Length: 182
Image (cartoon, rainbow, N blue to C red; front, side):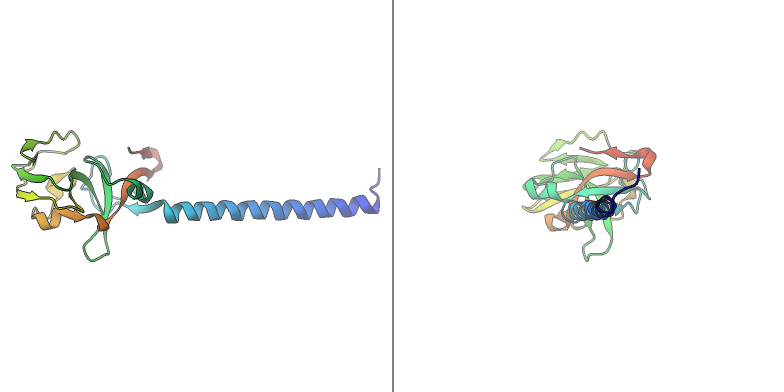
């Protein structure tokens, strides 16, 4: 059966409409993904082994920026933060919160004089840090692998909230080790 001229025109119009609709859907999906990764997540490539075995050099994680908008980091959270003068991005675990006193003696962390139980740290370290009051708007961050620390000076370990990018939420690469952290 042969199509009438009108049916033939309608078929071409529907094909055009389907192509435009598909293109619009692809553009909308791209815009949503771009918006999510601009406002919500930041992808970070891990540059050191300070958080191993949880995170290793070469892993790619997504840092949840939006979570910090609603609440400040909690003890035990893994966060990404910037070096003092911009540049490199590091990961660390929140150990002490604002208005707490932190001290490290022979690798053991004391918060307000009480020993902090840490099941995520690597081998024992000999790290020492004199007692320091964590001021409002600052956090004590340490890697899980404490022997990777370059400095144990409080100025190097106590990070301002402005330098924190976000909480580590998802490991995306390597794909075999993909994980959600919370």
